[in-house]
Length: 178
Length: 76
Image 1 (cartoon, chains in turn blue, orange):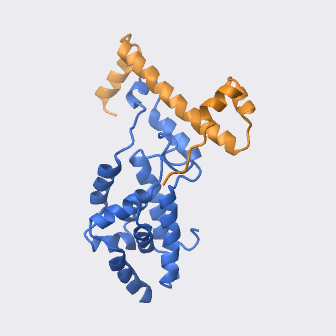
Image 2: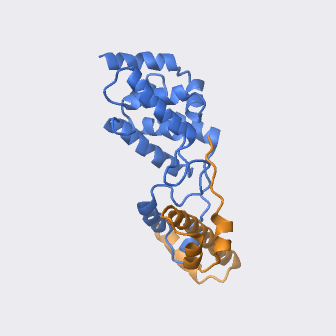
Image 3: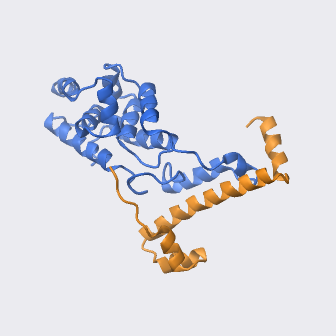
């Protein structure tokens, strides 16, 4: 699915995993894809900046809506035994990917930690890009996919911030026509 | 890590304060549970039987299946 993604769009999906890990969320939902787009600073982030939406504001929204996962292994308690939790985490994540040591998430599997809505949003991203006749799949199309999905945390956050599918689509269509 | 913090932690290693010792045990147990879940899932993905996994962990296949057998449902 990711073959036609531009570097920006790929980076956004990778950043989504880092965002999920930083929030101690053991899953990747639409909220993390949205944060990934914003954190990457590509065309999707620029598009959303035009609506006054930035990473910090959305991160606050996500924490308010979903909460943070608990960082429930106490690193200081392990340090009293001479165990460096960061070192353990680093090794485990090198083998099993970001967030591997975090509490198991609410959806997806370790191998494919995307929630159903996030997967749906990725499919819709592809469909939107095709419908607009885009040659590449940019992070702007990810924003469209997240809006089209409609039900996820990302879509709700964007709606609450006044970002509508039609407005975004017409801006992205302008880019694809150019 | 700040020097003071390092000294505090070094001091805690030989502490007989139950609070320190028990907190360390609790944290270690959580870490072990996480690692176990991760490696059991990995073994299953690679086609290991519950018997083999139980053997490697030193517990019965029933015990390991009871603990890890339930597959997580995919949610929205």
